[in-house]
Amino acid sequence: MMRIFDTQAGNVVELQLPESGPVRLYTCGITPYDAAHLGHAAVYVTFDVLARHLERHGSATRCVRNVTDVDDDILRKARELGTHYLDLAAMEIAQFDRDMDALGVRRPASEPRATSAISEILSLVQDLYESGHAYEVDGWVYFAVESEPSFGSVSHLDRATMISLARERGGDPDDPRKRDPLDFVLWQPSLPDEPAWESRFGPGRPGWHIECSALALRELGPVVDIHGGGSDLIFPHHECEAAQSRAVTGGPFVRYWVHVGMVRLDGVKMSKSLGNLVFVRDVLKEVGPEVVRLALLSQHYRSSWDWTPRLLDEAQERLERWRRAGEGDGAVEEVDAALDDDLDTPGALEAIDRAARSGRGVSAAAAMLGVAL
Ligand SMILES: [Zn+2]
Image (cartoon, rainbow, N blue to C red; front, side):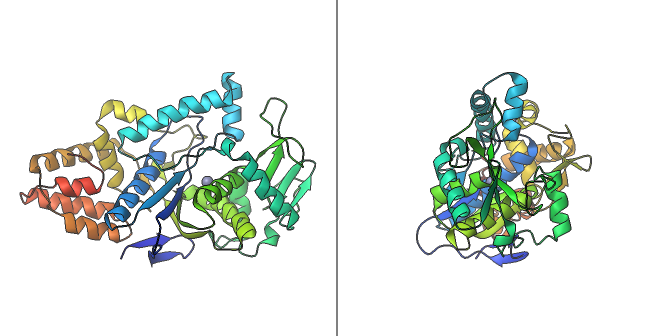
């Protein structure tokens, strides 16, 4: 039985999988306006290892990873470049796919784009509006957090922290149209040079959080078994996504929330705004993709950790050690047990090292981590 840390429970829990049908996995995908960095790679490699592990234990998986191809960031970047936002998206998605393919991250069953779901988004916004969970001011439609008592149950943050994180992460708590600073945008009027879709609230475009609710509900139905993403998405993105989805379905929406820690550079979280990103494609020019994958797996998914070139050197040595050990099924059981224990990939790597040092072949165990020797 696999155990995994569920953010909502605040604890490591036993993963109870559906008795029939595939495990429904939803991971928040990229906004395709810039290249994938190591923080992205850490998230998608983690969920790739998780899906492979579940499948080995007999569970089919259905993995969905959205593409946020309309939001403030991509529209701003397209404006700066003087290009159409969907052309920018197409270019960045192609690069992202090349990077993830190289790292051995298998493609999801479905990679739906936000712009493919405008009618579903509008139908959700309408439901929320008519049931009193949302209100409209000057063409802006907001979700009223007061209307959903479970708001706060994913992140467990206090109100002051929520307001401060919302301010930091684009939630605009100071917007004077809002009844409550934590209310969030479901639909907004478009600027003159932005894409706009007709709606009963006037021409506009969706807010960010509602995109993931609409796509998860469309692609997976009312319940997602495992919903993943980086830990910076816990608030506000996942809190808001959960609240509005529960307000529509009345059900739990997500059974397990699994979040991946942040990758830092010199102690500071890699982020676009700070300009301290290390891009996957640049690292791949220096070392082989298996080395990058092993370097990422050498850190536990839940911790936040510093990227250093030393990790690549260690991963390179490790890969050579495993290749020298060659074919065989050494450490297979230990790797399985380590992954069952909250996806302990550092423990799995050490078990394979021990087997390789004792002269056993380790190709099968390496394959369990998606590493071909
Ligand atoms: Zn999302």
